[in-house]
Length: 506
Image (cartoon, rainbow, N blue to C red):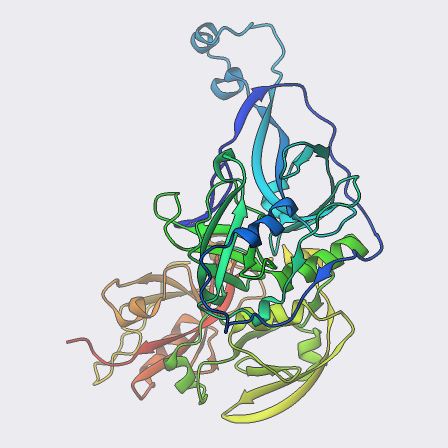
């Protein structure tokens, strides 16, 4: 089934085949195991070699390591009587016994994916969505001669990675490369079983690295134009030397078919998750305790007196968190994490997640235009954290500026909090309406948002918001806003910053 997780982005799964069967026994997940004995080659790619005329030798080496994965899950379908109640007309048309039991019908749904053998003793790396919710998983070797029942060692939805194990030895394992050494323009090959056609290879280049599309909580995607289609999910993306550098996971498409943009989880991230799943049975992640701005624009950079947009802007510091204890504040801009440059919020979140709980980390930040150094001891990310009145308006005085013109706000009370699902910890004023032609609408302010600060000053009432906005001078207004279902966040609502043009529209 091709499951769309955001507009125009499709996880590349195959179409389900539905058959009526009894329910199956659920799979048991593994706990802890010794580290997997991987074949790893982290040497840089030799880019001085002349263009090759064939990748046949590479595919002959890698092909036996690529497997087909068949997962089966039980789906319970409600009866027509459940759907239409006790209406005798529908009971007659659908042929149900009026005195019978309303038992849901069970069906078996099958999906197809791919994977790569990473150890000679049967560990297999694939995508989480290939086996998610499955009752039974089978693995067929690339040769088609053998099929195995597979045990799910562990899954990690935040990165879309899963590890399977089959009972076999002396298997042809793939070599794992260093995805950090990939460069845009490098040749890559996607190997898998699209549309159940059998082993298929497509070629392309690395179109971009370190991509984020807002599908997974932790993202660092390799973007490629090597064709990826339904059934390729979980299959390896390999470099010109036949080393696994990514795990194919999704495509960007307006039609559901491949459109030249595919994404793979980089091998270094997949390997980190795989090691944790094998040795610990789960992935433990570091926890800093901050919420971050999804995008830092040049306007925001100017408002915060930043040299550029490369870094992560803190919008919330959780009370009592490692960040709070370290002295981080809202509005701080993190530029380095343990001496590594931070490009954006996604990269910082990934860096923290890959650092063991209890580790002491060093942060370089910019606060009020000045650099500072802080140190924090990371906590452990919990499952809970991972999962995520009538309007009152003031009369505005006409002036040369147009501060928040077209925006109506109201005080927060119990009724509005319940209506818009606003947590009690959020304080500010509710945006009840926004003129679609206003500067605020253009900046991204919407009805249902909560304005918590105006130009770094807390807002506690509608009248206070009006008073503050009337006093604003300058070309831009800085708003701190809490939005329900914040775009780019890993959970529900969250805070972020907006800059609004404070000049009149012509």
